Image (tube, rainbow, N blue to C red; front, top):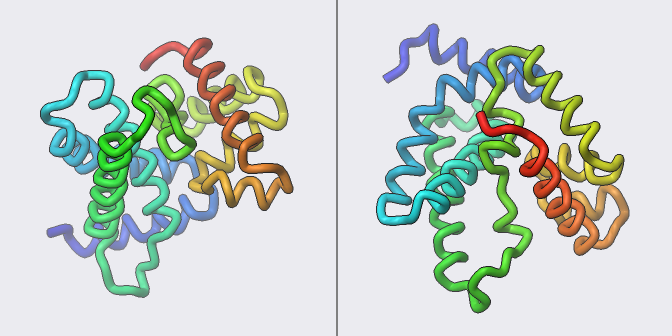
Length: 189
């Protein structure tokens, strides 16, 4: 169980992260990395290495979405809430992969950030995040960058399509192009 000061510190960091403080996001990610990694390992024990990496990235995405959706007024500890959100996403991801009628096809829901794509992974301070964000912005078209940042902030393709007044398929295509460009041009960390 977390001490009262750690709990209060988490709440402060969560508020800052929700207000866009990248250092707070990085601190929370570092603090909860053991939870993220252990859940990904738990669900990927018998999977090939490539799929284990995918699950770790899915878990990271779920963590950031949990961070955005967390409401301390509900009386649930953030760690418990994040654990439930991550577990649900990993279960859903695995179900989707098992029930996929076309093996090898990638739907929007399966487009995930990989280690080389994920701007949160190399975060150690706000300067490294800012440098990475600028590099991604240079790699992508304006449209791809807007879509990528909205996706990274936790929005779905449908939500992004509504916000940008575009067809959901164009959003999916922009994400796929962005992912390929980032994967090709950014080194693994």
